[in-house]
Image (cartoon, rainbow, N blue to C red):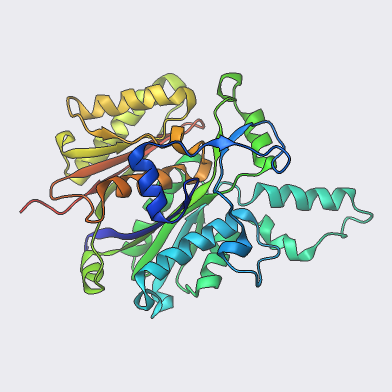
Length: 363
């Protein structure tokens, strides 16, 4: 099979809309987490990594967006900016382009608001029917495809903090199965009062001080030959993705080390070739995650990119934003010959995952 590469990417993040502010923020190590306006965002958290001044009307357009929820608007914006950066060539054959988009539960805000309206209204059916589509999990992926005329396979993936990596893995299989010539993949997450309360009650007391965040990242995956023919620079080869499960939290470190080791073997990458590492770093799982990575890499000393302290807990979008951070640090020309990067995560529900990316093979 022809090697698959990431050749373009787009981000909506607490740094702002676009790859440039994201790259600048990650490069400088500047936190994008700020104080919340409690009048506009009531809830248990005082701080959050919000996309600044973001509305559907501003970034998607006023027409047809009155009932569009925030996570859908983030996804539609990220997909639109990626397509715009690639020109008309990418959508010349829309049926050959697939879309794999990760999500948490869709829009928790929309689901809970719609359910509440059905319970407190004079009649259960006295709800706004225009808002019902926002309650389904694949709303963001479907709207992104419809809005931008993408007619290939359309898939929604939900897998907690590892969603972005799972979406990447699924996109690889979709492409290699011959279902599309190229595929957009990524994940999006919104901040809302409802999500904040769910996270607050779902966390341990010691984790409740960790702020939430929101955002989304989308990547173009295609063959290296197609990328070069279109005038795009292959930024990173997709070498391997791996996932495993652990039963007890004490086993998380060992499980991740084995997962990373398996991915490196599959990719044919030596630990010393790893230039960049982007861990999830979630709460009390951060320590076993870093220890597991160090166990797998041995004496290698890569550059670490820790996104969570800068962006907040972006939930389903976390590992996609970690992947975007790797591309941001790699620069406009991408990973260099023989260089590799590692993106990892340990989820609190008992799963671990990683992806290994590589630059061009050494001559």
